[in-house]
Length: 90
Image (cartoon, rainbow, N blue to C red; front, side, top):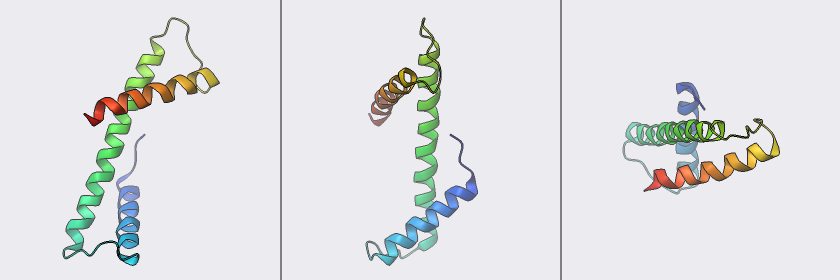
């Protein structure tokens, strides 16, 4: 899933604001904190995109093709996505 730079920026600002408002963290350098949050969000979506591509490739290789959106496809997609994410965490 592609996410725009504007969306990442918006989410980053909301997270920073929530952390500050709920007094969960103080940031001596707000720009640096915002950059770190943006990097984390972008990194997550990059990994999610890799996982999605790997899972779709695996599902496409099945001899009995599953129809995208069907219950069987969704169940297998979730199972394989969890497996791929676990591999990425290592």
